[in-house]
Image (cartoon, rainbow, N blue to C red; front, side, top):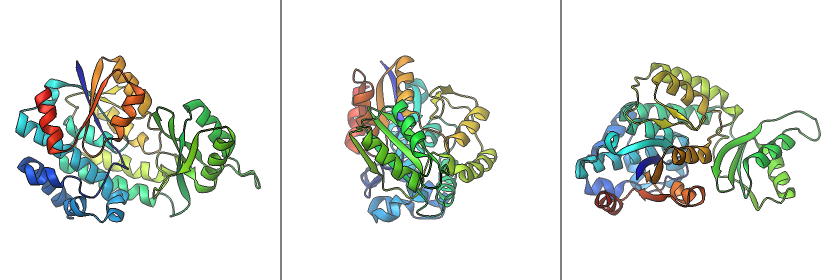
Length: 319
């Protein structure tokens, strides 16, 4: 049974995350302390106690989710001697989770991943003035249909001016997220309903991620990644923007830069990992969003989430 590790993205953060891990395991506390020191912020206190509205801010949520995932990994190694390069065939992460996956595979150390994700969160927040962009979920849509809806919604019916509205995430199981100018996203919601899409609704996000409006953030991240120390991952990462394996640090730099404005091709990533022989998928970190998607994407595969002390114990016993 070939094992893949997946790492969650934004939306999986929740007040209380990591608190039980930190209480139970010194190895987890070390990760949280390292991130706190790197960012010169008590991010761990925000993770353990909230408030939710501060944890939801993308500049906090991004490093927090990475810290949680890496704390779980550190505990697996400390408590069970779990050796990721020897046991895991492939890693992948959803959006910011790609940084967690790369840190897990040794491309970045924890401090570098924390700095990059804080920079990424800040840059993404600043890329568009508040309120000008939006994102929406189209439930029951397939990728081609969503692209057609975006193409039809791009033009302002009054002025004819074209606005940005693009597929941001193809999560699989009929779950597509679109992103762009707020008015164009509203038009996409209306067109989706006209097309008989089951549900189309705006998402509570602070900026329009993974679309062309994030170009200023992509420039910032290209510079940040150029400066960051990177090694080849010990395990190949399946990249969001290509749904293909990557191991070369120069290529990974480029892929992470493109990811800021590009589509998260999660459905294709999971299908590619299955085609490469993975039949057990473990979501490492906060929540069970990716595990839920797995049941639709690859129902024959074994899917589980490991994020609590009980999960860790059960996972180590299963090996």
